[in-house]
Length: 345
Image (cartoon, rainbow, N blue to C red; front, side):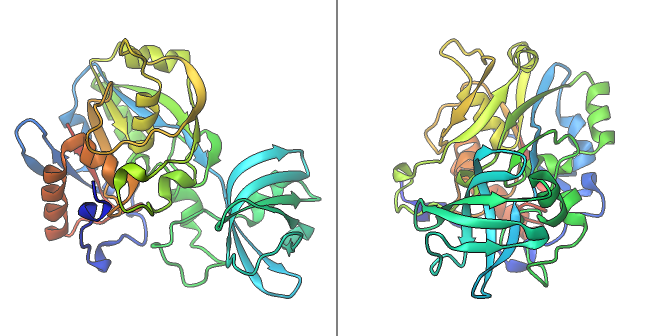
């Protein structure tokens, strides 16, 4: 399959630059795969489209403030995006990271940051990825919580790259985020409020938390001409025994987001049972994939030619997704991380 066949045109004004005033105030486009029906609704109406016995699988990974700023000894500005922690002590951390601009970075360069923290360039892993060793005299957690920023995607623009709106640290995070480790938000979960979660529970719909730490593999662009040539980077996931039991005894599994969906599909064995498991997955879902466990999906509107868009096309069929996206564009839905969402049943 050609990657270019999974493109579409989106008017720039439909890219959401800020979250809605309330988490659950977003719109909800409901797609029925069985009859091809498309229904406009709002997120608080989600329980109306689910049934008692359904289980929502949510990703409780917490976004870390992974965006850092510093200067080389020459005075040149450097932006750091943390990706994967390789080793750690209270004061010293080793991380794989993206550097911007990266062309003039050299081995053994020192990047000086706030609070006497410094990052030394240890190794060049690829054209875009480096291994950095951080020294934080006042403690690493203290440093990133004070000076790190939410790792917003590049299409969300702020006037000054070094200063974000205060809302971002709160709103680029689900209300049920628990386990730190993601460098991008599992955005389908951003719409949930306590009121919506309670309405779901009141209807007899249970919530099964799993963890997948969202890494670069989820948001990095696909650079191959054909879909099949692309390889996803590994991401850590974990499913507890209690969540596995909920999932295996569900009337229907509703994946909240592509990360939850990939986790459940990765942990489903040949007998169709989700196993209690922790490890790494590089599962790449694209059209032709046969879903083993997930039967319904809550998901945001995704970038063209992305692995996320390909997963949604695999789940609902490319023609139906094209039709739904055209409907969303014609009706001025808000797109991407801070945008509206879909329920596909």
